Image 1 (spheres, rainbow, N blue to C red):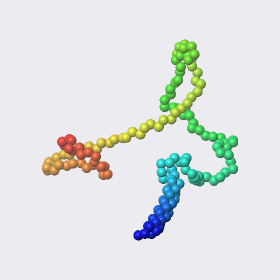
Image 2 (tube, rainbow, N blue to C red):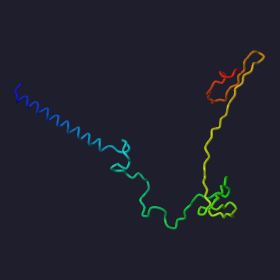
Image 3 (cartoon, rainbow, N blue to C red):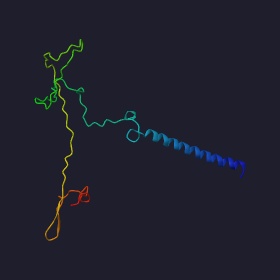
Image 4 (cartoon, rainbow, N blue to C red):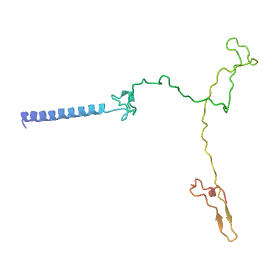
Length: 157
């Protein structure tokens, strides 16, 4: 192979490599732009275009509560389950004892707590007996009840 042929071959390989590099750079750019908060670890605020997904129709009214609209709020219970009286024992300025003073109710606030749901456990105990005919009669568990523990292994019935 002559020098001219070698140079031509290397020049052809170089142009193919450069084309391949350009294709890869375009792919990298496309992948980099395609990352959003939905398909990567990026924060939603970094998304380039976020479409409004609201189904509400555009209105000419200003946002927020409208004038002359009477709002509603949760009503206070007239019979709370627990009342905690908050009275100061000492004056915050001079430190005098206030326990014997007469107090006046100035404000009320109520907190509604939902109690935690506690599990209710029902134990089904199966008993066995021996009949005079020699049969060992064992009671059946209710239909659909899954057996979690075989208590016969623990207790000798």
